[in-house]
Image (cartoon, rainbow, N blue to C red; front, side, top):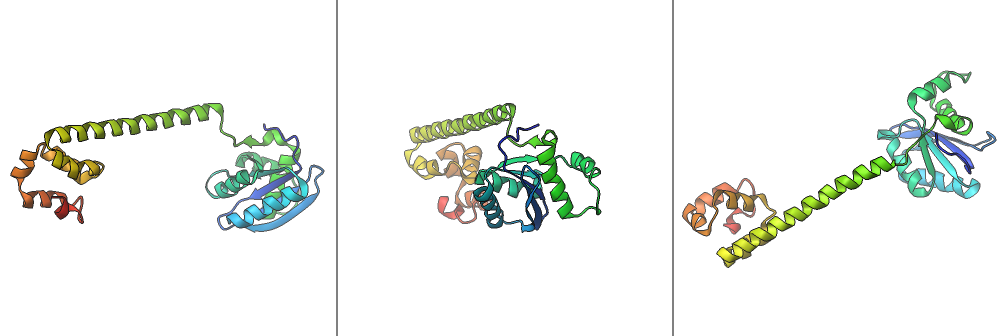
Length: 218
């Protein structure tokens, strides 16, 4: 359950690939918007800004938070709206309580908005949990560690190349990220072995990995 205190408009979106149907209700159930809406950032932002300017805090609710529902949620968050989603199974059960015509986009959007208004306990928050944030920070930390290790190894290789053959380091050092250069160092580990391999063999080896640079590099 999420806290819906302070919400001035409940905007239900029945999301679709090309367009959505949007229905907006006030806390008293008054319908202040009920139209089809293109699935484009400018149109979504225009609606969110208009509702906020006229009514105040907007809660945007979808029944599919991923895939086709990702864009409206991202735009709503950036526009300053609050966001939530109504699980599809829960929505289907709630829909059984509403009399009237069979399933339509407009009916579904209205049900989403009204469920958010009258049954906030059915909503699910889309804010990242502390656990999720911690996991992401850990992954980012691993990424930073790997980047630091790559830099350390590159600096070590450049240092060794400089000690062995400064001229070779000037050619290969700035290109240590390239797979062709790494292949050279793996197959021929010294200036002497590179010289012994010969130009033709080196070009043949490197051309698949660096078609435009092979001749010049060798």
